[in-house]
Length: 315
Image 1 (cartoon, rainbow, N blue to C red):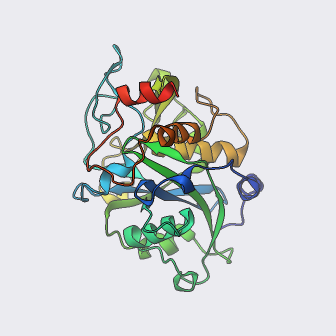
Image 2 (cartoon, helix red, strand yellow):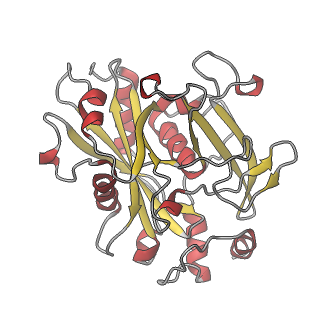
């Protein structure tokens, strides 16, 4: 790995210095707490990349719904008719076999912090060791910051934990050294994408999203009686894996928001497309908690409906 570029070094410094506002996460019952690991590393040019996973289609139903998108997607982009299915993509109404997400999952105990939850789940899902001593030498993982919590339709508060993988060796390629050693156990694939790319609506060929670019699509919807921007990014798949280049990994919903917000904080830049200025859903989580929606006992398969959102928005 080349030394961090000046832009990347400043981005890491901003994330390290970021102090999130007070969170509702610790007020939630343990059954409503979840966390994800936003793991960054530098490529051979010193630019930042983020690790993502494609969740296995065979993943148990008790865990897979955590990463469903926070927003309903229209089944018809022209008429903006919405589907109640949180897996529905707004591009053509089709469904992916799995969801793109960060490694992560639900908390085990009230004492478990977000970063401990995220690290434990990352070990279970992709084999990233919780114990630093078990990381391939000379790799080291630094916890940079936590973002405000996000609200999943599955009635969970999800806390993103941003971390950076240090190589300690200017000649080491982190992606080639770490990625092959990870052991996918609950995911179908592990891949990475350039973090600054998520601030742009243009693909690598410079085509604009409005004129046919497959990289970014977005639209405005309604989230708890307020306007919410829904984002979808299409990350090209590696030809080495035998994947068709046009069938990119679809990053959308809550995961897309988290990546976008991480990039905004890191580079102190606004994206080239429309977006929501606030980060996370702390206000929504507080209202849901106040309404009694976050009970200790969680009904399997229960989702926040538009009617629920309308009631909570009035609080």
